[in-house]
Length: 452
Image (cartoon, rainbow, N blue to C red; front, side, top):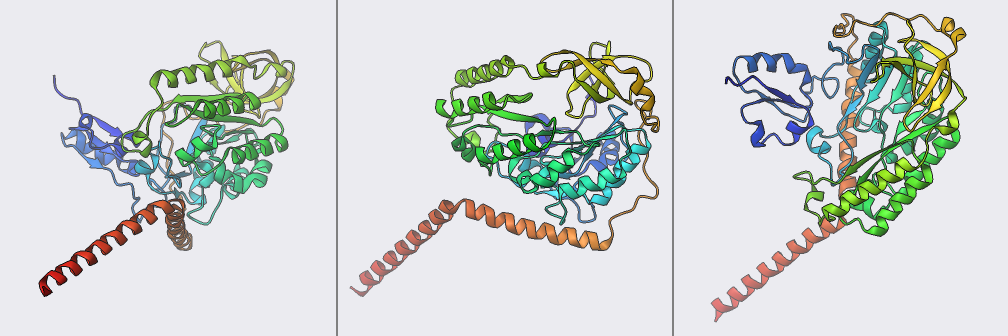
């Protein structure tokens, strides 16, 4: 059979481009998405093309060039905008840094223009995503709170903004302003904050740059200051060196907070990462811990106290049972409502009649539907979004500021990495000193022998 042309893109081929399974295929790196047409054309001609640089070209305004690119939205009501790429961390188990390189943020003007275009095309939700949204703008002299205010200013009633995952150390810097933003009626009161482990010893081996106390500070402040705040988190079961005492600390953390969503994963040694060389916890024990945490998560109710409550919701998709629409309230709870005509893409009030582990079921308050704001109709499913002819590129001053901040951030990060590993440099210095001493001794002995 004739071999079909194949293009692989994203983090996996970027991080492991030399794998045998990739031979004979075209590979597109994480920073070359704007060249997909070029790669497709060459691949169809029978050529194998590989564009894998982790460093964005100097003429690019963001990690992958301009955001003024056509796209086919999986859901015409949801616009997903990548606000930055890359990472400031050096987690021992992760290959993101290797695949995506250092932090690179899109200029705020690019993101705002993309959001405006999406709203004109009938989008009802704007999701901001990246490896770590809390780091946004550190390389260009901007910040996540400032970007959020910019977006709120151009977002009409009936459209909601959702902030993606943020790690504790960077979000800590903006706790107060971000709490105010998460209270805003146009922003969902939900945040994904991965803790990964409830033990400081495990976090240190992971090189996560925060403690359990830091994580608690973020969660406690948001829960106390943002009404209806919902926190989601991640746990890695069986990280190398994790003792039973460490594991009990993780279980205690979940028992205490009873998070409505916990993403549970078993440790997997990714080739080329420091954690892959660490002594592993026995596989059967890793699986046992995963089962134990899953049982703990399933043991507590997450929404039972919400029965009878009334919420303002936004319906954005058809449920898997094909009998309900999926809507979300301010806390981003999944609310199942009847599939009445004209509800999709609209905001309205509901009263909760039933609760489950992962959902609420509700009846519609009919009088609220007429009050919903009128917005542009969404594009038909499968129709690509347009590009904006009047798109404004970042001005020279903004580009220079971005480059200067990026260089400064990279210098700071190199210093931090040196500070975090003093033993490494002490060891190197000791080895150099021993070699020098050995050289002196050898040359001295040789001189004495010659003089004799």
